[in-house]
Length: 273
Image (tube, rainbow, N blue to C red; front, side):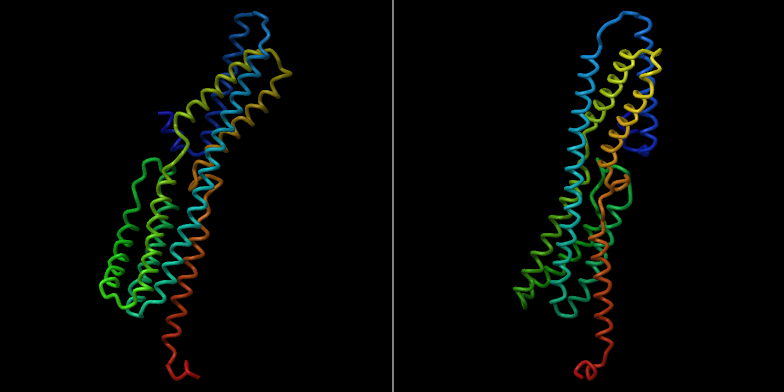
């Protein structure tokens, strides 16, 4: 149930819930200290628990940041592959170009919709079936060109571009499903609660001097965990993977098609002049 909440709850709700649980754990540790009434040096245990928690947060942050960078690079890679296909299609005869260009544009629009909409976390998300269907139609046209074999060099370059698009699509979808393991998130929350209880036990409930410091520390702790979880949500968090390369390419394709239509509308005599 906790794992489901981590995946579906908004970041601010997770932060509020986590801060509340940490406060309760601190209070529980303070009450335990007051009931036992034994003066022990708890500084080594407190210091060790805070250190281990810091290492765990640093580890999970590194994992989330690396996957964020991978997703961002794959956006650029897929945009580059689609650009290659678009430029190769422009070299084809008008009848082939008029069939391929709308398919490439539709494929790009579907890929943008797939990565911008839908569930918050993609751990078990299905493949982009709609984009795959458009892709199969593009491959059917390429197969016709191979059968005709009238322009083998241009057809080969178009095949290379289509292969790059296939590879980039599979890699992006695979990277979208890769998130911080739920077991690691569970351990991170458990470590946080145990550390809060230890700090509460060390300071006790009667220490008003340490209370503002504890509140500041637990607030920073919650923000650090939220930053890790936010990086792990590339489509819904505050730090999102930008789709700008794909959006720019979409605008370039639309402008290119508009220019082709304008040029086709000009009488041949005016073009010669």
